[in-house]
Length: 137
Image 1: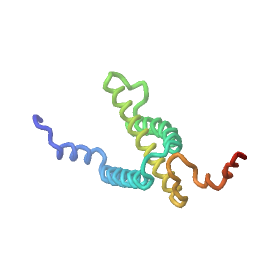
Image 2: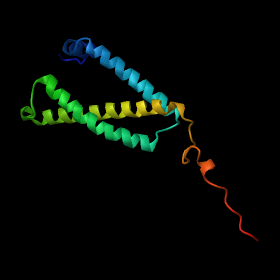
Image 3: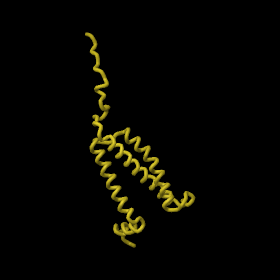
Image 4: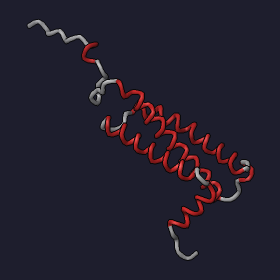
C-alpha cells in the first residue's frame, strides 16, 4: 500500500462500521447544517449558551471514552503506548466537540421562538429601565 487512496479508507471504515458509517456521516452533516443555521441566524455565537454547551461537552468527551472502552472490549489498563494515549485524547476531543455543537444547536433551536436582542442588550431591557430624570436647571 504505497499510495494513500480515499476509497481505501472508505472501504476500511465501511468494513469496520457497516451501515453506521453512513448513519454517522449523515448525522454529522445534519448537525453541522443545524449548527451553522443557528449561528448565521443569530449573527454569531452567544457567550452564555456557548458556556453551557461547553459544560455539556465535558460530559460528552467522557461518554465518548466510555463508549470507546465498551465497543473495543478493552479497559483503561490496556492503554499502553503513546499512540494509545493520543487516540484516547482524540476520541475525547471528538466527543467534546460533537456534544458541544449538539447542545449549542439544540439550545439555539429551543430559543428560536424568542425575539432576538441586539448584541450587548437584553431583550425587553428598554421596557424595564425607566427613563432618566433630567436634573433641574
